Image 1 (tube, rainbow, N blue to C red):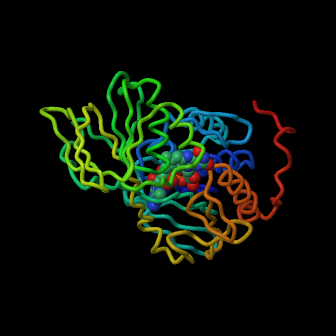
Image 2: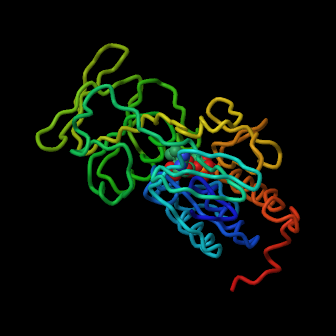
Length: 325
Ligand SMILES: Cc1cc2nc3c(=O)[nH]c(=O)nc-3n(C[C@H](O)[C@H](O)[C@H](O)COP(=O)(O)OP(=O)(O)OC[C@H]3O[C@@H](n4cnc5c(N)ncnc54)[C@H](O)[C@@H]3O)c2cc1C
């Protein structure tokens, strides 16, 4: 059985920063994540996208932010258990027993759940899903694959506009199709994308995808008058959001509110020694942002310290007073 001071469920930005902080406090740490890759939503959905609201970085690419978090967390010498889901959590008098889907067991003095939105699956287009892998994609892990291509993006949320913003400078053309005439995406990004010259077609739906071996065009139907338009393209990005499922976490006896874990002001859950941070944690006034998750991670690890050993206080001291060697 693996034994550790801190077990962190989820290796997204909040979990990675909690790992760094655990090391800073001198605790051993294991990170467990169901995905094969480190980095949570950022790695899975927007690695090439610039993020503008991380303190200290006017702009940082998602991939670079995760690389920096991994490098920072490496000082904690964390053990990563990737591609592994935590299936059960049980408390006892001295800590928490976790069971992994590999049937392996783990004992931790404290657990930090940084499970984000849980396991997610992308929403399907109403038609044409048989083109998946033949020009139809849900995510754009590598921008360069679409250099010089004609790209059609379906969706009106952040992902759709982020891909449009990143692809417009390198693609031959980018067209965004949305079924409504209002967008859910951040207003500033919508304005930037418009200014870049991306064609926006609203109140319209993709009604067919055509091609041979690969996609060659999409058929778009305008809702107002039923007019049909054919757009030549090489790639269709279906960015319609995703269905999130927090999976086994819902059965661990934690107090939940709409698929989120309720925490108090120390980030502790309704189960002693179990803390939660990042998108999955909720309290009055919660804002699900990376920057907020970082602060929550520091709060959770420091408030967990006295559980690891009574000799530890909550305040960690200042990192600027410690050596990075
Ligand atoms: C397109 C897009 C753009 C965004 N842009 C911004 C932005 O500009 N600024 C900003 O602040 N935020 C942005 N966000 C939101 C931001 O990505 C999230 O707030 C952030 O990723 C949350 O981090 P997290 O560590 O809490 O969770 P996540 O990043 O979701 O990571 C959670 C991890 O937990 C794992 N997990 C879940 N359940 C289990 C389990 N039972 N066992 C093992 N592993 C498990 C998951 O596999 C996942 O890897 C954006 C999100 C999207 C989708």
